[in-house]
Length: 338
Image 1 (cartoon, rainbow, N blue to C red):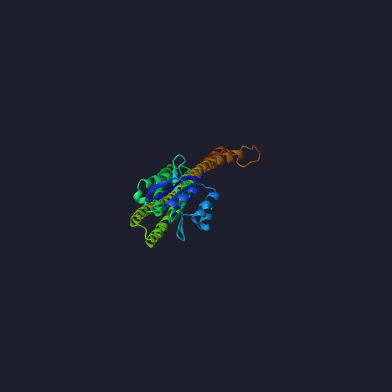
Image 2: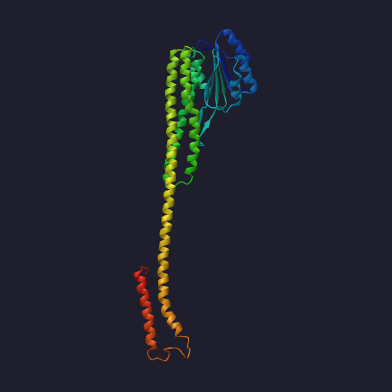
């Protein structure tokens, strides 16, 4: 059943808890009170039944049926239509889960259509029923309480995101290869969080202007300003988180580039060391090749060869081999090949 809670209030006290919407409409008219109807993922027929009873604008009804709306506030004659994007932090999965809440506020009714577990509207109702002097201020007081609950539930989300960012900062300098993926994922959540919270500031300002125009109680003005202050702090934290993640991404890119430079420098040093070794090997090969060449030529045993029968041929060959080797050694040493 989509009907979660359904009550009629007079002077801040619950006077009836009807079991059906038809009973609610009847009691509300007889008691001259206001109705607070809570729906959870209702069917189209149930939404249209409420819309028909309270003469809700068809565009607002279509938005409520379609879902996936941005945070906004719209006025249709004497009815306010508010879309909120509540959120909760899922500790086990380290992610933010966003919901959607539609609120219709009229002169004698409040209708909430919730599409997620958050916010806890039962807690809102319990709080308001425990303060009848505030609930006696009418549907606008219920709207204030809902807004206050949504903003309060952003607190654990802010704490969870802050903890995730702290962990990312540790991962950055540990060289974790998965840190870039986590930065991008967290950035998407922060952007979604900003989309949910930033429109609230202009929404509160618009409500304050409406409260002045329609002579809403001064006490509600004060409560609304308090919620606005909390909202501004949440928005500022969201902006700071986005900046921190952008800085983390920049630092990560810098560290990756630095590590790549270190690897390239190491490869260059290794290549230079190998080149030096090749020079040394080539130099010694050339030095050893010179006497081998002389010995090979005079080892061919031809009958007619110059200096073959010369008495000084052997000492000359030895001297030539030593001379060539020493000369090559001197040349390579001067060029720092050896």
